[in-house]
Amino acid sequence: MIRIYNVLGSVLSAASLLLASSAGAQNPTTTTQGSCPNAVATFNTTDNGYNAPSIYGNSLDSAFYYNATRGYFTEAAGGQNPEKTTGQGLPRVTSIISPLYPNPNPQSTFNVGFYYIVGNAVSDRFQVRIISASGQGGQTVNNVVATSGAKSFADFSTPTPYSDAINPGNPLFSGQQGFVCIRLNDVDINNAPGTTYRVEVSYLLTTPNFAVFDDLSIGNAAPIPLPVTFLGLVANRNGNSVSIRWDVADEANVRQYQIERSTNGSNFTVAGSMQPNGKSVYLFADTYSDKGTVYYRVRNVDADGRSKYSGIIKLKGSTSFGTALKAYPLPAANVITVEHQKINGAGKITINSLEGRTFKTVKPVAGSSHTPVDLSGLSSGVYVIKLQNGDSETESIKIVKQ
Image (cartoon, rainbow, N blue to C red; front, side, top):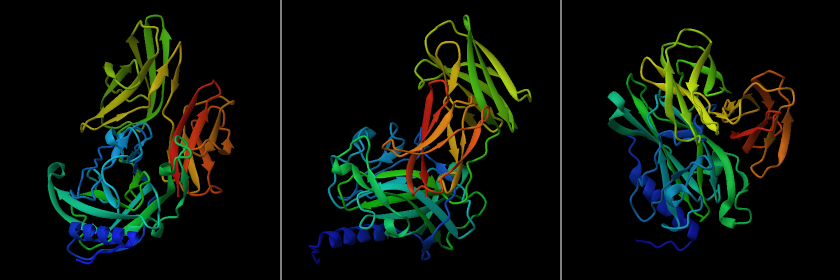
């Protein structure tokens, strides 16, 4: 065995050996720049069923954890601290694997996009593998049908400097960020009926900096349609009762609406249910005498058993304030639409950096619930959209701009 004493050479050699042993595609895969217009998982509020097992099981192995506070996956014991403080040294490999998706791309192709933060986008590498599954629930894993091999983050993205606002000045929380978009071309990607795919993304890291995975795209896939679109949700307190009203559009095959209540905004219980009646506005009266802060949401259950939640509203005093701020399409290109509660003329939307710097301010039309925002003058990276409704209430979400 020849020992390689150059640090970077050692890293790349180890990574190449590791990836060579993990590839399972039968035919060679080629890669090009991809098309990644929509995120199928943003991780803003949930892990979306993704997991990060220790896939390779050797001295290089590390792991991703879902960090609910920050809304992305990163390395940390228990997911509380984004810095990798224990375990493997350098180089190290950390991986994540998605739930099952049908391939939204033409046969023999699969586009994969994701937001990253790494220490060095040139020397750090990533690998994407596409794993086919079939049968009910995808319980039969067939094969690794395509693998990108080790690629530099900088080859498939435009990295920009990253400095963490929560831990300013800590060198382990700095590095580079960007959005990878890669297309895997392989004849083994067969879009036969009943075939679904898991996407596995691995990072090959050469620095001790913390690493982030976020905002997965699988090409031209739009969010999976559900049988109802929630337009709004409000609540009003009337003595010992709370009236919850929600507006819907595109209602089809809805079996039931379940109204859920919480005292902390996290743990919900069912307060009641209603059958659909084809109307656009629904009203439910919840007998609830506690005058403290209470949260509500509505869960739709369709005829096939799938479900979808409305946004969460917070009732403090006599009226509620909605928290279902959304933006699309993501990752963002030049123009996005911000979906928000109907607000008065004093409301405003700001586009900010993670450090709090404001780049743009937009005033929504009074009474509107959808506001277009032009991002064409902004560099690629992560931004925070903040909505101030004019009544001293604020909501915010993060987005990635390509």
